[in-house]
Length: 110
Length: 394
Image (tube, rainbow over all chains, first blue to last red; front, side, top):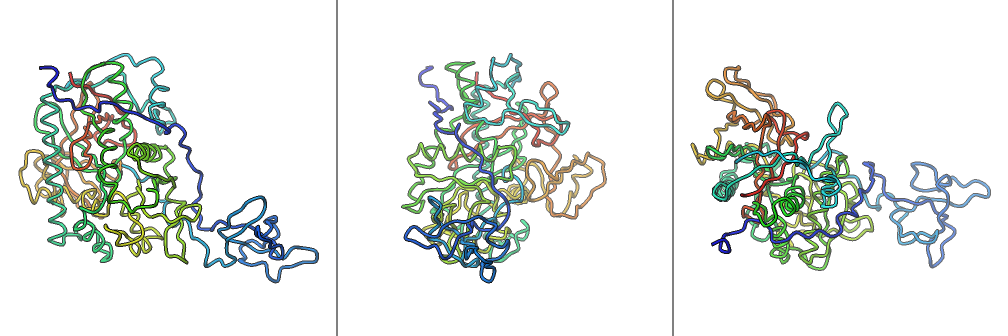
């Protein structure tokens, strides 16, 4: 009767790509994804991304911060970035995607 | 039920890592690393024992669903510490619509020593872990050590089937995201989520991957979005509902909740009604509904009552995880009512085998008993330092 005995096991277990799982390093801040861009540089490929130091930290706009020879730099949020150009984002901090609203409480499992 | 010692397989650590158990070691408070996966011993069950345990698990699950129904019908949410009316409404609606909501798995923790009836210690129905080791390395261990033998373990097959069976409950046309909390430094949550994602892919689902911390809220569309601004239409989260409903984004979760049938823009798995089962108050509700049931321990919400003098008791915070906050009170110790809401359950010390305290984790997938994982601990409380041991039916 061995053939008739009920089995409680999986007949097979197959594992595929679990080995390549990499833990994403993320922070718990709520700052949206942002790039410092030169507002005067827009082409069909987007704005030119410039060094962060051109954008005043914490400011949502570079307005009034132009110094001689400097770009008209401003934070540009949630943009698609490619080849040093940022497009399809927003200059408005309040319209930017908000992140970090979950988590930072500890491990979820038990 | 027997515990037998064995020589671990050479290279076991690498073997189980390749089988998905990416954290086979645990760092202890003294800084030492000790095996979490422990094959220096294993447990042996008879088929009759396992079949009896299966029946117990099926019955306990039915009883838990009856308890959930009772909590909703009798409006006992306050007993669970759920007082926000919006959360109450969401959970109640989720329960009423449960036939339309995907629900995959849960784990009972049972006290069992091979002699008397198994006793329910708790039900991890919202965010259970220790799944990977039970489903995969344990199965491969049996294949290698006891080829052709049986094991109470149809987890992998049932998980793949569960996704396939419930694919029609998922919103069409967008991937099912799998979310873990990156605050879990041990990697256990990540591993569990990665494994579940794998089973969903094997069922043919289109899946995505994100951490809870990365999930974005797009104020323009009023939708949750991934790192590339794509809408998150459905999401398996290894993240408890009590956090989902209290985090900064809690209002967005409730505003956009798809509680079945496209009633909102984001559907979460497990569904909100699992809050009814993962709460320790369930144990007291069960005892109310099924007094003296052989697989239950007496449990109360208002204090230990007579348990302090008769058997001793264990006080479990309603929302504690991995043994956190649990206190043990031996018989004769004064009855104490703690400040935080707790469930007071009869003390039923875990049985010891070769000096190790043993707890059985019995899995439920899609409402059916699905497998067994055994953890051993040094103390009475099974905490994050417990070890996982394989089993076989001989």
